[in-house]
Length: 120
Length: 298
Image (cartoon, rainbow over the protein chains, first blue to last red):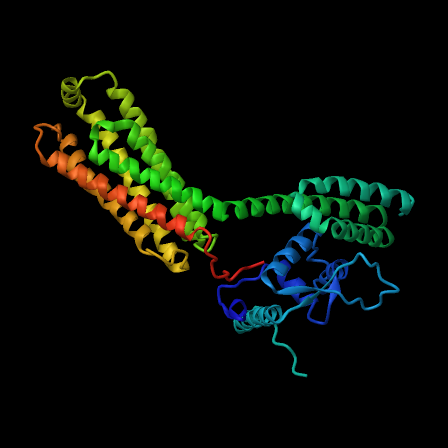
């Protein structure tokens, strides 16, 4: 089950990574995912409806995310909305990708391309 | 900045967007139409309230580009799923078996000549499709490159053979030798192209064979495609030495005629026939066997 996540050849597209990242905090529906991605990236990454659902379709097929039947607040929400949440594989994948990016950032810092973060 | 009412513009935009969704494959539309429209509607409201007309125009431009690109992607993926279906593997295997039969026929009855070799090559294309299809994308770039090489080699060989047969058509067997001796340069070029095509086909099949081995897509007779590819490549190189070299020196390699001229082609065509038939039988036997899931990327 964890083969996909631990396989070094598994690469996430930017859209897939951002969608997984948006689901780390809990389940969400398509439009909320789209808004969160836009906010995280300060509007630089805008997922169109086709990209969003095309990626969701493939991630569902690969078992990285799953559809959730629960509604956070059924009174306030449109019942036609579909909610998605991360699976164990999806969580491992997003962690592995975040670590890979962290390593890259560290390399860039080592080459003085970026400022060293202030110690908290 | 807002110079038009939300309700009308939203309802028109949603109707237009819904109509444009026809660009997606039917299955994708059935599964996600409601969600796509809902996300578009929510985005429209957001842009309308936040940025007015310019936001709505920007949303439309972005959504339209996204629709065109992703509709193309979805169609390509749908087709690739069809390409990787067990039916294609099965039919490809069957074509390969018959292709092998025609190679055998070339060895046993050389008089079957042109028609048999053309049929063997065309049916061999089916075998290539079956072998590539069996990899279901797990052969990655090596599998795709091997498939492309195989197709290019076969098409090149068919085109050259077509030219060669039209060049020699109407000649009796006695005229054939004198014609070859008169036109050695031209015949040498055709032979060189055929041998090059043979090597290209062989390299392609060998690459597909390596991709199959790596992806473990043929549990039984797993080394067969690689062996067949190497055989094609060796034959291409041998043919270059046996036929092209003398021709390029102005000699007719088929004259004087000796028994070896029968034995070598017989062995070659029988080996090719058995190889393609074996590949076909393997593909037919494995067509429905489930592959282990690949390390996919979304």
